[in-house]
Image (tube, rainbow, N blue to C red):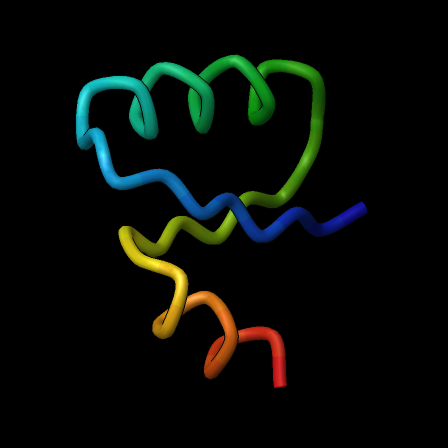
Length: 41
């Protein structure tokens, strides 16, 4: 399963990404809502 993570705090985004990847998820990270919208479209 692939997840798009939108989080503006770089440290939190990194920790969440690592945790999700440890559970075998593919994670794309963006750091603002507009970028998240473009990535999801």
